[in-house]
Length: 220
Image 1 (cartoon, rainbow, N blue to C red):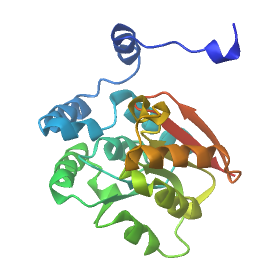
Image 2 (image 1 turned 135 degrees about the horizontal axis):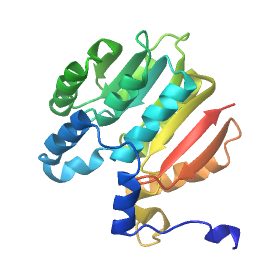
Image 3 (image 1 turned 180 degrees about the horizontal axis):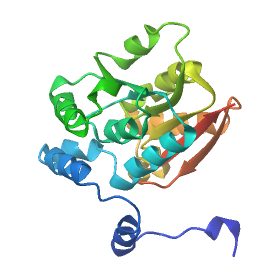
């Protein structure tokens, strides 16, 4: 089998099988997903169950004690990360929407992880740039406005320790990254970001087809 053919295209049925055979059935996360779905089309911004599970596994396996998230929405990914942190672990969440993050706050409280999380409402670049020069993170997750992906990445890379991870969501952008007819600002920004990461020698990176595409970059 040729290397470029070593993948399995997912049908709806195969996706359901894959999801059913991972640990993706947490009742509180399910309830949060259901509440988020009531927001309508915007609910598509929430990470998938298997992506949240993967993030939790990575955080726990890496022994993360300090993490940052750019783009919190209703709190699914932050809940997965915070649960995987040790008792003294801390997560900084950056978002601009008080309404959506109010939902996140409720679920953090219910999960008993609110004391691990600091939510900063305001432009994420301002929040990141205001951090002390000595601030270091073990783990970063970027899932916010796409035109600022490169800026968020650079700010996180400065603050993530060597061998720390940066995860970037939506890098396949529903397949639009390879659609030449799509020249929207968001699509062009993701294409340019993906091209940049592919040549960035400061990290070791892999793009995987989880949910809408996820890039995992390890800082060297």
